[in-house]
Image (cartoon, rainbow, N blue to C red; front, side, top):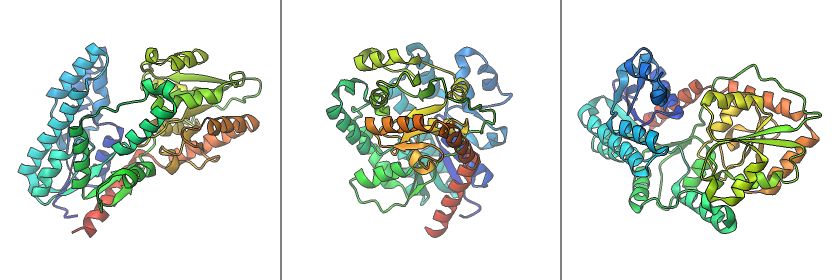
Length: 415
């Protein structure tokens, strides 16, 4: 990469993976600017406001003060969205899209006026279209991050589930994205010079279901783990139930019916805590299944981590994930995870060593895994400690380092 030219990166909400990339670009000395909707810095007005309950979500947008001179913010539409969500209790789809698209347009304008300083633009799904159009005009490379699986794979798997498990179809997910939105997603992929994903399954979803010729390289770089706890206490499971935990949206896309069915007849040996909310009243089987669990509709993030440490195993039987951050969170707490091969588990877990992998959508696979744990309960501590060791070897800083190295290599050989 030309050392005089650097990378522009944008993300509307600045989630964990975007922050990992931004920090990596800064440490690697390749950050030109970071564009987001809202950012706060310790000691600033927004940071102080975030101490009040109504504004507490803003604290999630905190960034290191060292990044302040690189950050460009465009808050108006996002503030409107956040206020509306506070009053309604949920997002309106078009408002989320409007936030993404407005930021994308703002970044495109920035590229137009600063193109001489820019080697590449790094943008995320649904927030790259206008940025990439402008970048191509200026002969700037387009780096595309797809944090979720390809939309055709998503729809195909949901359709299969709808047909084969109709009693749970009311809480499956979204089929009604507009043709305009889906076409935009395709165009972003086609404009990309290099594609970055966080799991092998996400890469496979593109290769399997994207219908257009795509010679663009696809790089798999798993996200990092949160800071590792060292105070996990492994309590022997003799003479007590094994404590299972599920954390996530109450959607059949997460494979919930298969977990509940696998536990049928085993509640004398296992307890299950479910943390998450959803349209429970729309799905009678879900409502009935939750009666056998300790259901908690919401926990603050730090309380979720506490709960992970207090349980023996996290079960995350998702039918598909672009990654599955809850997996790495649990492993960082020393809590071993049962998950499917359609998550980051394929990349981070050796089944039986630092977690357990099961076939997605299989009651038998989950049940056999649970029965095997009953047979060898001492594995819980061994596998949990191995999970913690895996987490220690891959902090978020390593994700940033690998991302920068991959980008530098791509730009060097794609001149």
